[in-house]
Length: 145
Image 1 (tube, rainbow, N blue to C red):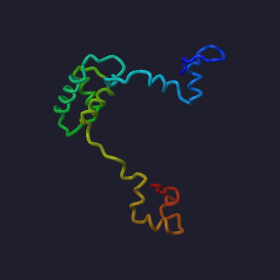
Image 2: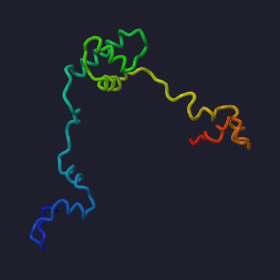
Image 3: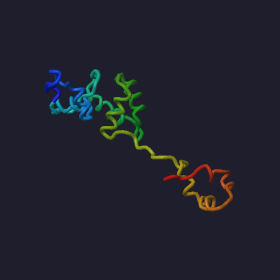
Image 4: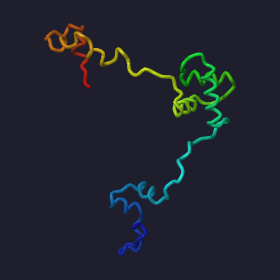
């Protein structure tokens, strides 16, 4: 449609004008013009001196040599540096996350925003006219979820 010749001016309409009339972004048109990819996109940037498979083996070896049940990516990255393996911390994190090697972590905090909801005096603090039962916390800390 953008190559169609205008009868009044004798020139093509152009992609910008056609997209403006159709209320469509030009990027959408360009994306649909290109053939679909047959392979997934690759990570940008240079490949490190060690391929991912070899680095994963080094990470597993560092975890096996550790006396603890699980370790985080920063400690594994530091151990790899001590062994002479130079790589980025984020690459170690990505590999450990993809292969389920991260240490188990706790979700949330026991003193978080839902702590007062389970407190035994929460109901009387909310239902009473006295806001000083929790030292003012009954007014300022309101559960929203």
